[in-house]
Amino acid sequence: MRNKWQAFEQETGLSVARDVSLRRFSSLGIGGLAAGAVMVETAEAIKKVYAAAEGLAIPVKIIGGGTNVVFTDAGFSGLLVRLGEGFKKIDVQGNRMTAGAAVHLAAIITKSMEAGLAGVEKLAGIPGTLGGAIHGNSGNRDYWTSKAVSAVTFWDARGNTLKTLPAGQLEFGYRQSLFQKIPAIVLSAEFSLTPAPRENLVAEVNERMHYRSATQPVGRSVGCIFKNMKDRSAGQLIDEAGLKGRAIGGLAVSDIHGNFFLNDGRATFRDFEELVKIVQTEVEKKFGTHLELEVEIVKEQSATAKGPEGAENAKTENRSLRRWKVSGEGNFV
Ligand code: EPU
Image (tube, rainbow, N blue to C red):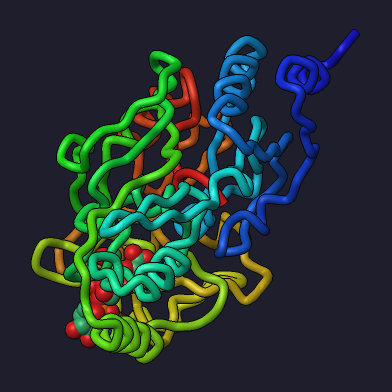
């Protein structure tokens, strides 16, 4: 009898890599195995993947640059989907730029500088792909992806349709977007840019890159672990709670920035969970503030376990797992 992966391959015409280590799909370098992984090149292929996965009850997780996702030691029992070369195009026409979801933000910024167009340069230094940046509305303290993007084209799993919506209808907020709420995959986005002297753009990018390298550590991390409060930086609270350098197993709170955890190569998800708990507890004790996770944890499919965020998170997780695994650093590598 055919197993479900063979059936999936036959239905989609795609080849599935089996038992793939998740470590290389998260910049934190933690995680067990994904039962299957596949690369898609067209919107049509995405459609087929979701149709086949639904029929065969295979959970699907779209992954982008992996710079904001944390995998568990148990891994992922479903199918990891990545967007390939077909989603890596950038096109500039006058003041409008269109980019595929798998394009890295850095490439978009470089292209806009070459074209002498302003509007994305303030995102300089943010790692990951456009799809992930839109999904999580990635940003700095004063500028977010949603400010740069004018419209997004996505595949909506609810009606099996392609849609394009203006940024104003995408429910963007601090590290939030519509794509965290609905089963959809960002395919491309449009930017409405304005002409600007190249040297100004280069200066802006250099300043931001310099600030990052002066204030953030280099190493295996997923950037900031916790969300900021309205008026306080989570990193500052962690720092003032005396937690810099605190380590569990192979994972430590960075000495440079309190909101970064660094993996020395040996860290496990258990280390992550424990360090999250310690930091939350200590900060709560000292400041009475609950730190909420900013990174996304991709739970094992059967997940009934409560994550560091507690029962409410587990409930939400289970709701979204009922159909697809929607998430992530979002979409695309
Ligand atoms: N601070 C400390 N100690 C620390 C870290 C920060 O005292 O260990 C202080 C800084 O001195 C500064 C303030 O806290 O006065 C803010 O620090 P920073 O400028 O580094 O910004 P942040 O609020 O910690 C946010 C984003 C980062 C983004 C930076 C730079 C969040 C959760 N973090 O960090 O985003 O790179 O601004 O614009 O919104 C990410 O999302 O992964 C991320 C790294």
